[in-house]
Length: 69
Image (cartoon, rainbow, N blue to C red; front, side, top):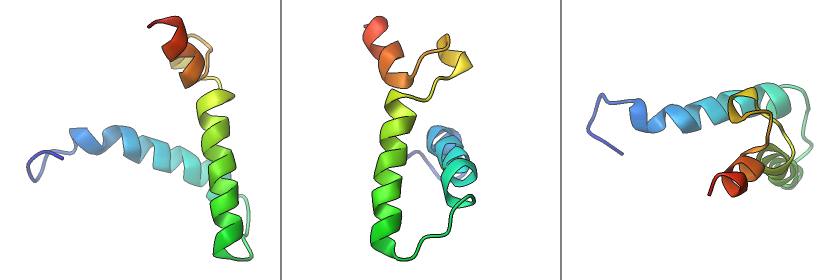
């Protein structure tokens, strides 16, 4: 984290949380915390491995990183 008032360090995570809320949290109701944790783990795996992004040339984050290493 940088000094107070500099939000650039948080931009990537804030973007992820916004996407995660709109694609997972707001679309479902969870019966308990364990169910939410299980679904969150599945969503993070989906986000990193399967979800394509146009900014990454139509690849998932993992595919993009392995291709351009």
